[in-house]
Amino acid sequence: MVDEAWPLLGRSDPLERVASAWRDARHGGALLVGDPGVGKTRLAAEVARRCAGASTQWIGATGSARSIPFGAAAHLLPDEASGDRTAVLRRTVSRLVSDARGKRLLLMVDDAHWLDDASAPWCTC
View 1 (cartoon, rainbow, N blue to C red):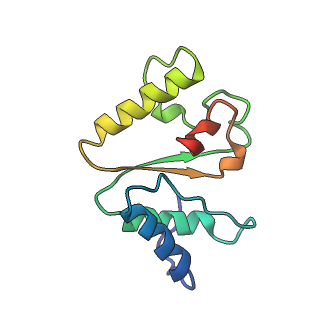
View 2: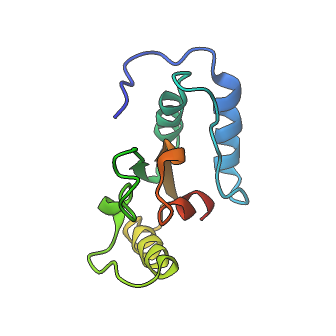
């Protein structure tokens, strides 16, 4: 997804803030915000790399998948994805937590502004 071969320079402050939030289980998440092309995806990949021991799952939102309910998260959905949005999200999160086998779940959402309405709650779970 991201070329991690390039060094990450000049990002120690935001990287440490996100890592600190990760270590403090009271925090439910972090949001990386910035103009297009400033390296948010690369920073997120570094965060995921540094969260050793996490069960990491990625959702990559795109404009083309925006018209499909749960389009960006389709690869994470259970085989039976019927019911209302809340029920589908709960079953999916339950399965992801179960699959993590005791590890903390790290859910990375790239380009969240492209999420469809059904998938958008991933950013508030």
